[in-house]
Length: 273
Image (spheres, rainbow, N blue to C red):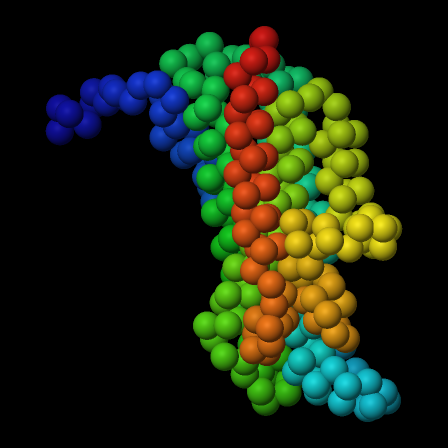
């Protein structure tokens, strides 16, 4: 009982100093409040709502359904296309708030006056948000979409390829979250933290038209329809349907994510508060 009344010392040193406490704090922001519930409701209303509208629509355009492979394939295409756009928008908004707001309010300076490393400050935000994004924005919405498609069409896609496709979607969402977080840590401009990731997300068609080889090193082909060759295909959809796809955009996007974290840590380490 005596040990319960005594504060337990934190022995972590170096870059890990303060990570566990900061990680618990960031986790509480997700799970200790109703934030997770609000996120779940918002994304379910958007993604599953749109998917349900399409799946329950009357079959007025039967030839196009046949061309896409049927109603279940159409539902798969709609979900990954919409999720590949809507979720990154939410991730960008989340990412730009993570560091910039705390720098402007003075919270970051106050936290860093404690025995906390700047590396731990950034990594705690990255890890906690990566877990929240995975569970609420990707796995939950993916499970709801899978169940809805199976219930309406009577066709259930293979589980493992579908989970792989959700992994592709997750990497896509992380790319935009970490890109926004990097600009949030590296600058004091909210416009840069939001505007540049949004421009990359929505402006890819103009860039690809000039340099289509960029599809191999950017995340645009992961979930966007028509970017993996053939009508309506993307890497995520191709993975579920057993079609061929290139792994290089997946590898490149993971490398980009690592680079964004490294730049955020490097720049944040050099800021003065």
